[in-house]
Length: 74
Image (cartoon, rainbow, N blue to C red; front, side):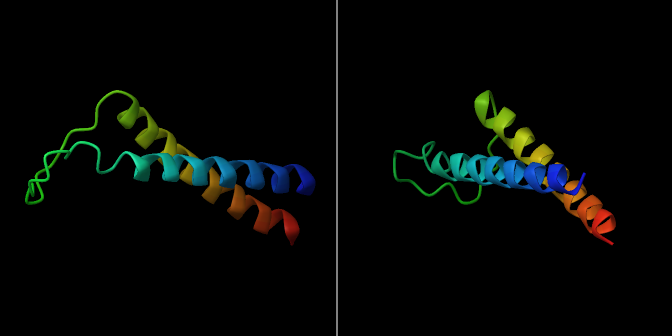
């Protein structure tokens, strides 16, 4: 059981890192004109929104796996 949790944590952490990196790569692409938007809220659509929810899900899964691993270890 402990080995499966450790493998799950590794896989989840790598997927979480990848999803965060993918989000940061697309952060500045909407502002190609060079004008300052002044903090205007932009709506996430399409793949950007899906990636946002995947990142949230992976972070919750990672947190739960870490808590479970602590209890299994003791």
